[in-house]
Image (cartoon, rainbow, N blue to C red; front, side, top):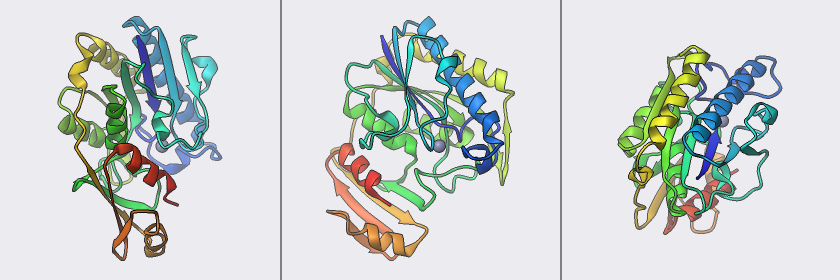
Amino acid sequence: MKVYISADIEGVAGIAHWDEAGKKQPEYQEFRTQMTADVAAACQAAAAAGATEILVKDAHGSGRNIIADQLPETARVIRGWSGHPFGMLQDLDDQFDAVVLLGYHGAATDPRNPLSHSFTGYFSELRLNDLVCAEFHIVSYLAASVGVPVIMVSGDQGICATAKHFNPAITAVVTGGGAGASNTGLHPARARQAICDGITAAMAGDITRCQITLPPEFELAIRFNNHAKAYRNSFYPGARLADHETVAFKAQTIFDIARMLSFMA
Ligand SMILES: [Zn+2]
């Protein structure tokens, strides 16, 4: 069984400030360590549940956060970014059986995590087919496009509630949640245990229960927090300026949506 793990940091238990997610800040070491320990625990639980091959995408910032030597030897890590539109799911294909998302976080402006955002700091809202969309949704549809179910997500209260609403069959592991600029996380050891228990539960039984259907077409509206960026990005082929801060784009496939998002700058 092949399992793909996509790991971010802004949903790691207790993280509360951008300095803790930024490679150049001293506070980052604590959460890099915690992210690595969560991924290592998840790999061990997946291996115990039958995974024979595990591919991990280090999916935060530089893509160079996880300390690979601390993972079990069944795991390989994709570090850095190739530029492929699959991004946080780089190299996922139909040979995999399941996707696990770790350390995921609420969409931009979700008040349940001080670090809520969507891909970049300059999208204030993404709407996909008129529903507010987090990185989670894009990733879930991308996985579905190659026939692989997302079976588990860990992260803040916001993304876990969103994920359950989107796909009731998914296992959602809440490791923390916030108010204002605060975040109350589980103890890191408890968070790791909850992630392991979540993987064990998610991998038990028929994992195809987590399969979702793709809508026949996608309509994306990106609201920027900067009108100049909206104007510039409205010239992406097929896009249009819906209002002074919103770029709209229609596509038949989630790949086209992901490609468009990957070119926004
Ligand atoms: Zn991140």
